Image (cartoon, rainbow, N blue to C red; front, side, top):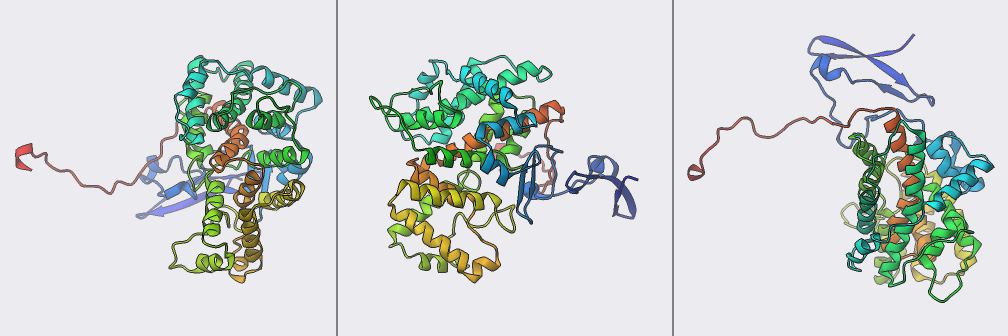
Length: 427
């Protein structure tokens, strides 16, 4: 027997169906609330509002659980590579050998970017933030691919997916290369997806490309850990824009802009900027930990705690190990990273942080790794976008295939009541 929830208001009772997810999450279906009772719910930030039913990612913040399509993030980070996870998120199952090889081949065939895109890139000053450049270039892809995706055609949908997966890393790498005054380049047919990304970003003219396996492994893990995270700000933006039947590239461009904010994807950049300030002040980590505990002090400790995870961030546990390994492997000598280690140690031993479960999160460790790999701080959020790309695609595809209605939140109006218009001379 299906369950219902009863709302009583102004002497009347209204019943609404209850939806139960496969992980026993419970939601009250209120789509008829306004029609039947003349009411809406008020939920700033949509913290208690389910915008959709999704089969892509399960997240339990209280228990520290994150799963893609049922697979634990711990298993995927240890055993899978990024392209396998991309396929899993978008198509629902891990690929077999033939499917993965074809997927990789099809992506490489779509990795060429129209030469005229270089003219658009040339129009940006070097001072432009890479996220602004990347969002604009992604949006510009529409001009070179004007036909809309027929979402009812599996072939059309697949072509659009491999096209953006092929071109997006090129655009991201070119954004960095322009900033560093390096010639624009392409990947190598014999390299994997993550290796090609690294090559395009860091290859130097007149010098043979080579890279440490530890670097690729660390990048691979970071991309996997960022690949999807349920209905966060940027993902919700992609779904909202896509609900108007805007194309995939336009929806992704909107997601990039949403990710840019310091409360979302920009958090790992904020971590390094905070560490730099501590270094400039003399590097006393204990002093800043005390400042963080003082409610009257404007200083905020970036990279600790999480809006969703109330226990620990499962991604942070994985990436901490990777951070330790890559720093040891590369032998990086960086006072800013030493400060990060000091903050981490104090937070894990300080009762104030332990009791409040304010542990270092994935943004804290990802910023440390990106810095160690020589990635400029303003590129950190671009790296986040590269990882989140398959999640955005999967969410857009799911939303369109389910024919979800256009997003249109309501509001409670608190402005002026009706007023008579006064002619200009009487005001």
